[in-house]
Image (cartoon, rainbow over all chains, first blue to last red; front, side, top):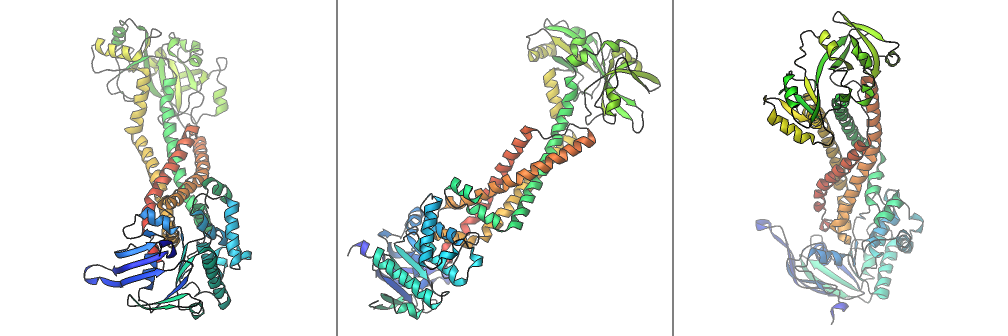
Length: 233
Length: 390
């Protein structure tokens, strides 16, 4: 099958941390192909290598051994300028919201727009307002993060990740800070984006509500894939 | 402001928003930059006034070449020059006139405090050697014990000085003799004396009986119009038998005096260091503010890196902040510095003032050094690692 059907692929991927005596292998021989438009969930005990895999796929770490192909580009040995350009096509949702405290909700989301270049005030703000509206924050556009609840902040961070229409969304426990309804709302939004735009989501989570809605569940243990279960979604 | 910057940069003015997020911190940072600016302004103002005061006496005379003793580093320093060298100089075809210039301090004992007047003895017949406004007032100097007084002398009430006219002269006693002032001119106290006085060479020799008419302090020469003063000075160095003399064009003598005051005299060096310290304080303050700011926003910057922002974006933020600090700190700094200089000027009657050139150079310096501090602070940016975020 062609590369565009599988925006994320790995082959014989190994990864180590540390050096010399303290060198420890975190990932063993990972072979993976994740289909376009799917919502894949990564589970496994802590220290199993989930986050390492996520950061490798998101070009946040250099590939040491084996191959990672992201959106048709080989990441092993890729130049910094190339990975930087690739990251602009990704949406990251971190466990902590990582919002900029000096920027309002709308401005934080605008950061996800202007990474592509010069912006004009009105259209950028409009795009930000639209996505914040989808996440139920229409009335919080000009609030600073300090004046938002934890769940609201997390939804602003999700809006920031999605506003640039990313091809791939990489998320680490994105619903941890959300209540039941908004958590479900976020997952529905990601699934809608998957169907409508082919947005591919890879998510680390232990949230059962999400597991039920995933297209595929990968289980990682001690750096190896030990389970791969396709779901109806 | 935020909107203006956004339109300017084509991006959110992150630096501005970050700096103004905590108002008290922003104000403290601006106060620091303003303080450094005040320091630089005051020191520069004093240096500038020293230059003005040093060059002031050169303005009283019109000459092309000056012959001085070997140790005459400034106008008021050094030994005498024998009058015979003037006669030798006159042999040069381009030299049209020569005049001996005598110079000493006269103390005017008056209540509440004594005035120390830098007194020049000149030949009142040779008005061509005087600035036009002085030349017009030399007639009374032909009388015995007559003088012209600097009306801007420190410690002299302005109305008293302004009242001195040929019709209403003012007399005072110095070293047992009576001197009569017939007119006044605008000089201004410097770092050496409280003011200036001009008398005839005859009066000068009466005031200082130990001095000889054959040995003035300097010899001034006037040249045929259109001749090159530097070239004639060089010719004279060959022509005059005493090779220890300093024979310079009048302009070069003034410049050498100034550079001696600024680089060799303790006062000049001290104020020069003052400027340097002001600049260093400014650099340290801006660096401290910026590097703390970078350290405080490591997570945010790492997030932006993960989103695909490149090094140029982060440099842009830091330089934006540096320029904001420089510009917004400069305004109060210039106002306070200018106010302090005016205040000091009115107390000391030194020519202390903020000149447009000073404002421009301090502003340019502030922006350059703020940017430099910003450049140092950006080294910490590389520590923002997006891989740590998950």
